[in-house]
Length: 169
Image (cartoon, rainbow, N blue to C red; front, side, top):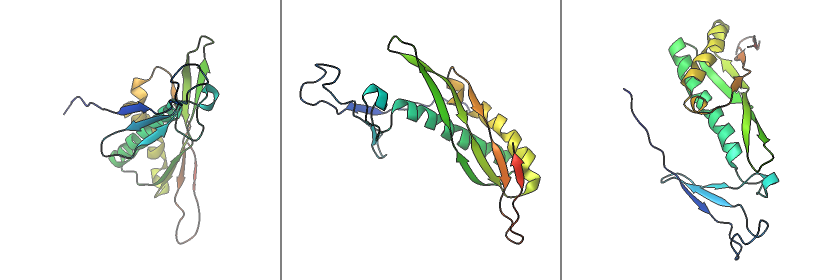
């Protein structure tokens, strides 16, 4: 069944130091992002843009959204392919380039998932499931830059022999 899904967030600037935006150095870029029923997310701009490096920034959140969306789509693709995933970690990174006019854009995001499967017979199907996951990922389908994948698939440690198998995808 197809449908429309709406998502709502409340974003509140919390960085007024008492003089508002009277100058570029006179305010913090502190933001609180809230969704009813979920913990608040403390955010800011990235450090090069006078932000707080201890808080999430929009660029972090975009890369995280792409990584999580692929992960969730991938797990579903593996279930459908009969692949038992027992571990998944991703070291995702994104490249954003400023345009010299105050703006910029992402050039690409690279996902580097390391997937652990239950059995060596599942390696090839586990590799192939990344293409299906990419096709299903709502976030990847919504951005105008490439989202590349550099996956690795390994087999879980055999409890009896202690052997580890698998090869990079």
